[in-house]
Image (cartoon, rainbow, N blue to C red):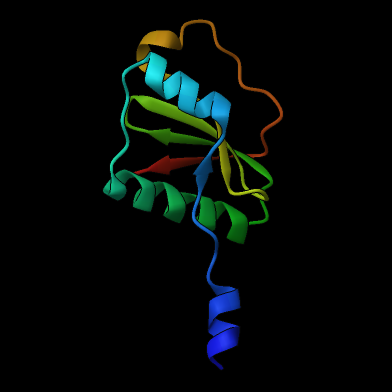
Length: 95
């Protein structure tokens, strides 16, 4: 029973090297509470069958691979002019 529970727990969301670089360039740091909310959003997208999702979190937009549980890029509102997000199949607004 314990093994089944351990295997059912989703892996935490991780940041790709590209996402880490973008966050650092924009002086954005994510707290444990932020990661908790992002994890919840990724889990919700996974439940709906999403593969690649746009996560909108306040002034921050993240593109995440739901299947890999990885944030692949991050864009803040100031850097968003004329950006087009492609190859996503869902969007999640994080509160």
